[in-house]
Image 1 (tube, rainbow, N blue to C red):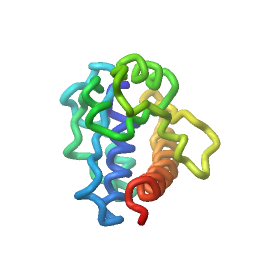
Image 2 (cartoon, rainbow, N blue to C red):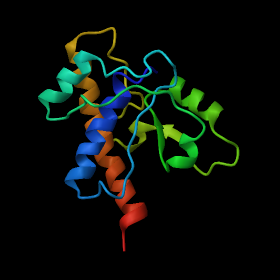
Image 3 (spheres, one colour):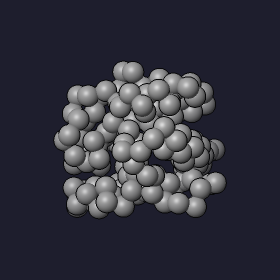
Length: 151
């Protein structure tokens, strides 16, 4: 929604995996919110703290709002929940080959398809988001390798 909790967590985790795979020069990664609440703001401090405890640096990330151009710039536009997916589907240009999907479609160990918003909860919510995001990020990287880097 505001690009200060779930989506920057996914960006930081996925960037970490992509860098470790030696693919950082080949994969463009960014996150955005569907609302304009926190444009230019850093991720929520609780989000940053939880991510940092697992080795992910979010300190340079800043909130921005998703735009039609993202569907031309990126092959994958992923939403954290169905409400945000619906918003992304509404802003998808009709001529775009990129279609918004749920991020957790790539998860292998979580049956849920929506990443819960931890903003109004306790610290355990941020840990749960990290667990889900790590799972989906690994699956997404495998998919990208299969689709774009296989011989």
